[in-house]
Length: 100
Image (cartoon, rainbow, N blue to C red):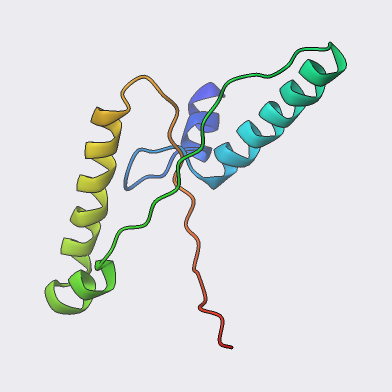
């Protein structure tokens, strides 16, 4: 059963933990923050980093989606190497520009 759990929270293309895993971790951290506050602790340490791959659309449009996938996989590999012992999650969001 553990094998299926791991597959369900891992992005197949990048090997990063997916949005479902992120949501689980967010709930866990929220619980830890609440408990720490209730126990009178001043803080717990964690960091969240968010990033976007620039020019992915151009890569897909000009070189094809296979190269776009390799672009994403390469970025994920670089991040995994740079942040070796930390949990990393892939959450795909589409941002819409607000018009004023």
